[in-house]
Amino acid sequence: MPSPEERLEELGFTLPAAITLPPSLHLPFTFVNVRGDRAFISGHPKQDADGAIAGPYGKVGAEISADDAQIAARDIGLSVLANLKAEIGELSRVAGWLRVFGMVNSAPGFDRQHLVINGFSDLIIDVFGPEVGRHARSAIGVAGLPMNFAIEIEAEVQLSDV
Image (cartoon, rainbow, N blue to C red):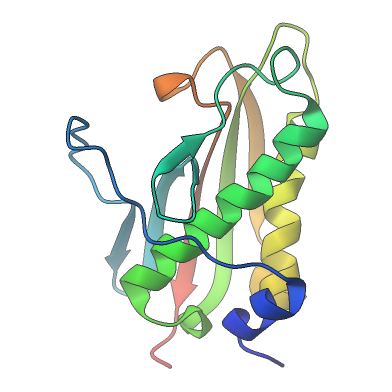
């Protein structure tokens, strides 16, 4: 089985740089917090290639279509992987994806949050395979997210020493 980095390349994906925050933004937490054999991944937006926060912004089902939001969720997956890799060194250290929690800034009546977050889940399974990539998941609609993000995704993974 190819490494996750090799699999990303096979799929035609490039990870963005690790997240960079604007100097005016104070966040008193880390985006990846390693404790023992677990990595807790804070809620992530999408990042540009240079690591800058890139949204998307607005309500899914109003300003953003479900299809575009699903692509954005996949791109958030790439951001999560970039920040996780920056923290742990190699993505092959991920022994298992334990849980994913996706929040979708939803227009009234929008009920396809689960399909939006499939963009993230499908990427993880494609990159890590069904054994390592399989995870428990929730996808919920919310009335708003920080900075008007359309989607925010957090996760927890189990790490190995390899």
